[in-house]
Length: 465
Ligand SMILES: *Cc1c(COP(=O)(O)O)cnc(C)c1O
Image 1 (cartoon, protein in one colour):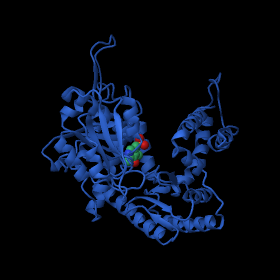
Image 2 (cartoon, helix red, strand yellow):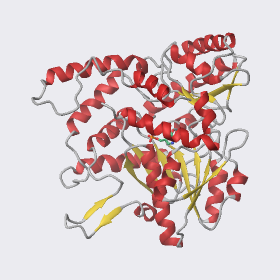
Image 3 (cartoon, helix red, strand yellow):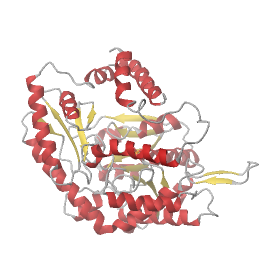
Image 4 (cartoon, protein in one colour):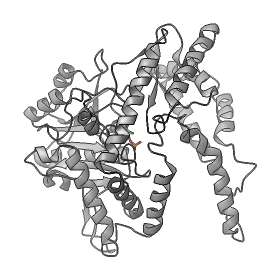
């Protein structure tokens, strides 16, 4: 693959606004008028809104009703100066966070365990996972003297666990999943050593939307005296309601005594604005290993619960407001719509003989084909306006369903476009998906460095003015 050509092509799609909008390499000498700036923002908004609003994208905007967005924006405006770092000036910030944590914990089984479930609000799912993994590292060093920590993680767990492994020098033992794409309990157990600090399972995992056997895994972890993290970033705010609606949901939360930490993303199916998530702990003692305190700094006694210093208190206010405005019945109703969309989509894909669905997921649906290049199908879908995710190992395409897809007609349009896309790729068997060569390279250990170099160039491109 010629990196330069590919990067130049990408440049066109990633930098579409260069010529037609205000653009600066250095500060303007005189400030521009607020009206001019607001007008430009409105134009950009109009260009980018239709795609997510009409349900063409996987995940990304989980609620998206204009009334909800307006409400969230009002809350932001009222709290835009708030910074939880200055808890003396804005005690409201921790009021909101304490209640977000308590509401989330009680939704995830805190009432059904004698232990106290506590947590913190973080800036997103990755942040929650990084915090939990750092906490286990420090806990294991302090309590067990483990200096070369290991984590046992199914291959389908989120990339944030790789990030935690790299950032915090925790050796990640990656265990291939079973034929049903769920974590392999026997293989996970066999991978535990004296250095293992934590085992991980997802409810559900991102690639195929299936739920790992959390009950068995967490029980093994409990018996071995190690931590168990349920990554419910995706499912935390939808599975409890799915269960109440009568869907089959295996246990995954604090009702299981072996589950010691969880992550649940308020900024996904919690319907808060982007920038919040919750990380939960079984007991305050474990949570203490997350905190940062320094007594030495001339700037004063400095303490923070999470990685950040100054933070946007307005995001926590928005998150609290979303949860309180929606309430149990609101979440239940939203989940019902999304789960119905999931069922229609599964049924629709199963009617296309060239495609098959991975496992029996609820609201994150992955499909592939034994006879076609599924990434070529994904490209044809892109030309029809869809923004689906192309995945690898094995090659498949996935969509996370949101309230945008529960709108009338969206799933019908998706299924009928999929039928057309499949027919098109069948007629053009020479067609290769644009991701196919890249994923071909990631599969070859000798070419992985080339993919890393390419990725670095891609990120550099983001930052070009
Ligand atoms: C989205 C997601 C994450 C990471 O969350 P971010 O908010 O993107 O950082 C982690 N795990 C799962 C299963 C997810 O779906």
